[in-house]
Image 1 (cartoon, one colour):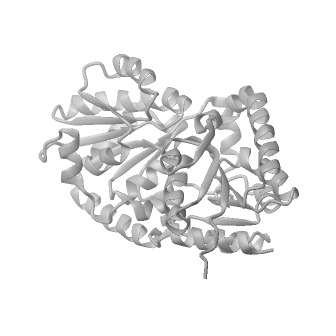
Image 2 (cartoon, one colour):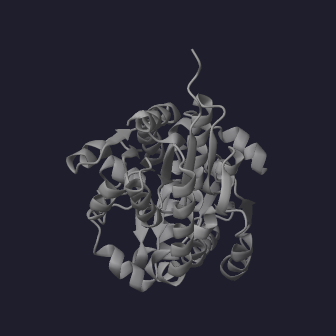
Length: 383
């Protein structure tokens, strides 16, 4: 019997976090279909798995409503051209990876045109903007969910969904390679290391990096022996260097080109922007202080749409404040430094966090690539 022909898939990932998820997903899909053909909007991790990038994923990177409005004509033009191309080429299925504001409209058009559509990552309708479930229902034939509570919620709203686990939980080892990461970064075993992760978007660096850097200066003033590492998305280092000179000129900060996983594996504590990085930190069993800061107008809109007291994924999964969150007006350098030093000084608390994060890791680790490939194959084969 001949093996089934490999499908042709189109994908769209926005921002570094979507590219990370897409790269991990494609690695699993290629294991199932070695001759898989893929193309769309992709970053370097997806391109490394053979995805042809018709546009780079940075073109979809926006931060808040103000930035989105400025970029709207360009984004609509890209979406229209991409939709035209896919309706003409007729791939086996389209997979939208996160980026709901861009992908929902595209998926709806493609689905109405007879293409199969899959959305990878349930939007956080359980946290804010619950009305998006109606758009998701119109857009996607199937949703691949990262968290175990999501499929039941979607199915109550008439959306077909599967829990596939989180690919990062498969990619990140259960045992943290701390010594290897420190050796790679030139850090001694005895160093006390703080990782600063300001986010992957330009506007996140503008809003959040100065606060993290000023906090680092305060922390070093109180504990002069601290070492700091700051992974930055490749290509954005030029944004960070002037901020280091302005806010932490006398602090020994090792700026890394990418290498966020090495930084998290090596550090003792991390101060980071809310988002995928907070889940990565939990999977690396690292104590963390989660922060975020938006432009005032964006914050006014965002805070009215929240359903939960938490914004960080580790706290959302636990249903309580496992780690501190300093959001908007609370995100001061003084508060960040205080909470970071408190974690460094409390070994029992760090050990308790490591145990809880290990439980989360096991919960999310369930061979996402195989589960996702099975679900995608079922959608493609369903007439």
